Image 1: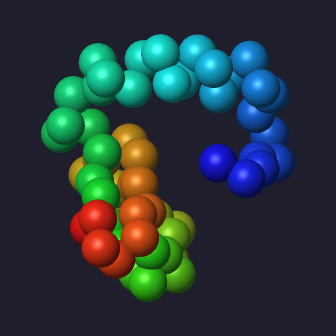
Image 2: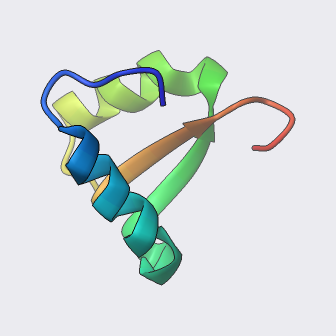
Length: 60
């Protein structure tokens, strides 16, 4: 993570500890190249997950 506009370092530290306990159906993983599409969809539809994780192409 390079930066954030609304979370503190303590928030990220807590998130790192919890990440292994998050249920897979709560989030979706999409390639970084689909970032604009993913966030546009979040603004224009009712999401089916609570988070969208963007990852480099070779991981997606």
